[in-house]
Image (cartoon, rainbow, N blue to C red; front, side):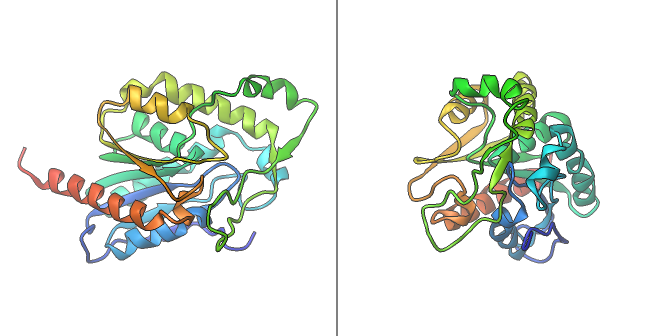
Length: 252
């Protein structure tokens, strides 16, 4: 697929110099969905790593063969790459990338987490049937390009393989069971209107995460990093990371 290349950028001069940001894209998407946000952080001086998750950026047939273990496997090495270059590491996740970001925070040392319309579960009872449905129905309609603005198109799969959806459900279970181990500041952005992720994830995270700063997005749908509120997300994220940098530099 065109435009889905991973992002690797060393830090430079700017207010975020010394910060490394591991960016996680969403289910059936690619780094294209978070490229503008990544570039904004790079322009502010941060080092950024956004791997292309295994099974993504090619065809849904490849994604059907991948699992949440495969998706997660590329993230710790990327975090190590950032740790070699920076003294504060933050993880940023969109949609299912939010679940992966929280999993990183549960298993690896990071200073903070940024979540944009994260997906860690659903109110829909249909998802309970996914493992059974996957045996008879290979794919369902894709979930890409849910933006309020018509000026952008997200490179994503037109079909979503149910075998991969079933694996995502297992990722949700792991993340939710270990939510109490997330002990770093979390910045949460939630769109008022989202046609991909329902309200379950936001409600759960607001209830379970003690160090949560919460913002509602009034003018964007699910892929808010490509939508009308992208500027607000980028600026607020920069301020959040700046605070983490200052905290890391204060005498202990």
